[in-house]
Amino acid sequence: MDDLDAIMRHWNTLEMRQNIQIPLPMSREAERKWLERVVTEDPLKVGYLVLAIEDKGSCRFVGTTTLHGFTGPNRRAEFGIAVHSVEDQNRGYGTDATEVCLWVAFHVLGLHTVYLHALANNTRAIHVYEKVGFKMVGRFREAVFVGGQFHDLVAMDITAEEFMERYPPGISPAAHDGEMMPPTD
Ligand SMILES: CC(C)(COP(=O)(O)OP(=O)(O)OC[C@H]1O[C@@H](n2cnc3c(N)ncnc32)[C@H](O)[C@@H]1OP(=O)(O)O)[C@@H](O)C(=O)NCCC(=O)NCCS
Image (tube, rainbow, N blue to C red; front, top):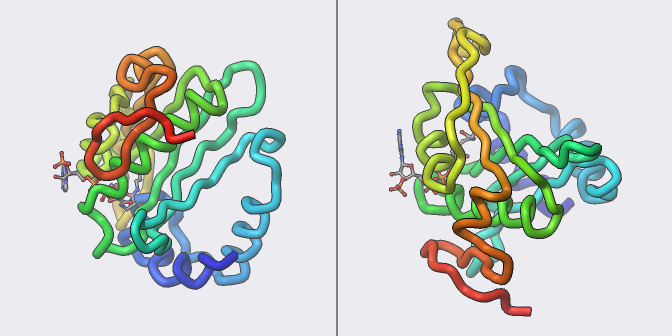
């Protein structure tokens, strides 16, 4: 709950809401309830895991990554990410956090595939996703109404096998520099 103030600082900007496809701003109370839910519910029961992205040195809250909908036999989850402040974007947090979240998905939760949807004009996000191994699998035409017009939505996914080629068991992603290092525990 300590991160609520930091979340409210940047979460409701127009650019953020357009990129994550939440059209209307969220109230502090709605956000508080969401946060309370995600820090108290058992992710394995509800199939919804939210991880905070923090600056490694200062432990400052930077954003969140999510895996959603992974209950059931398909072992498949939808991935989401937001690096909240514009000042924190383009500094490597998103790439690093995506790799760590996929590592959790495949090495901890034992998922089989992870997928996502992104606005086709969110070229930075798509670049980051491709960099960590997501593949473009399709395109929904004029699927999202943003800023007064319809935009295409791209679909991307990555399989456990593809991720394991880069991060086999026993190897965990090192923060910031993309190097591989053995787990510390
Ligand atoms: C998309 C997002 C997660 C990326 O995280 P980030 O920390 O900003 O990204 P990184 O610093 O790790 O990497 C940015 C990469 O994109 C590149 N990039 C920057 N602007 C770009 C653009 N307009 N088009 C293509 N690539 C771009 C950078 O050069 C860098 O690539 P490189 O490492 O190969 O040089 C983050 O910017 C964010 O949360 N944005 C707002 C919410 C959002 O869009 N969420 C995703 C919804 S699908």
